[in-house]
Image (cartoon, rainbow, N blue to C red; front, side):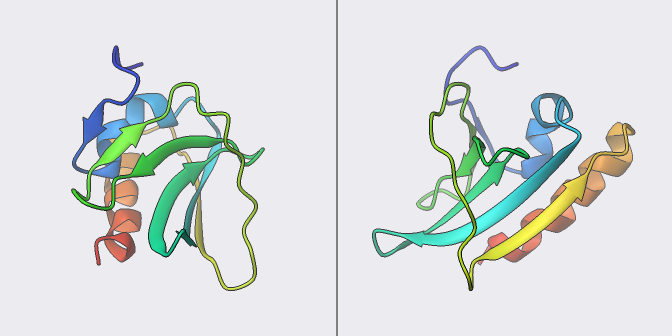
Length: 101
């Protein structure tokens, strides 16, 4: 796990070591206070990571109390980890693509 609470990563695959501890994740895009917000959720809706809108980087949220439930019209992608770092990182980078805009 990263030493800093909000360590930043340019790509979602940079968080593989932390994310693969969860069998399945959901990427959730919504609008929060008028700005697009993209975050990674676990099965219980707890926020694991968040995309920083101004930089496009991902930050690991080691102790985020926030829980999110997708609303009608929210964009969501689900991923089940395969346990193979190369394959998982490739898939995470592909999933990150729709959020780059």
